[in-house]
Length: 50
Image (cartoon, rainbow, N blue to C red; front, side, top):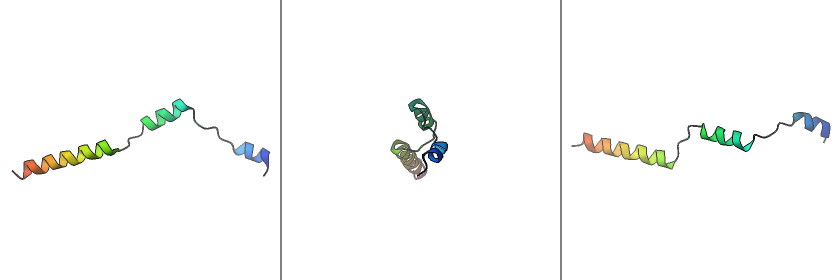
């Protein structure tokens, strides 16, 4: 392993603040989103079936 070559390839990791901002800015679906969508569909189906 050539230490100098490996050093040239090195990319520093993000700071904690950058990582937090990156995660918060992503539009990620979580379990709560899925439950809300399922409930909205269920209610919509009940209304249509009346």
